[in-house]
Image (cartoon, rainbow, N blue to C red; front, side, top):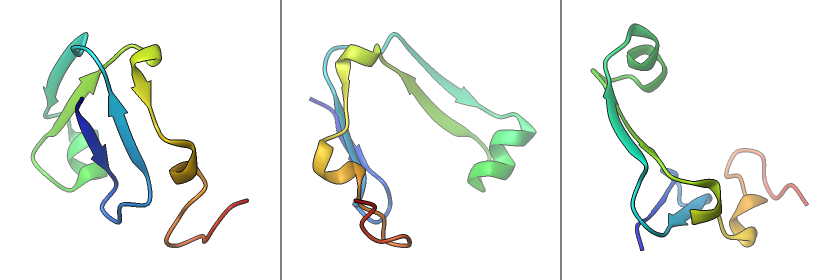
Length: 66
């Protein structure tokens, strides 16, 4: 099961199965938003995507949002 998180580890995610689409985007907007030459994108069905409940309320800059 592929997993990932934000830079600080406060928000985590995982998905099952295979992505329905992958893409590298080189448009100016993506370069500006992410500070690089391109973005790497993976699209998975919503029912295959999970962000564990305990991580959804955490933010290192905003604190716990409960």
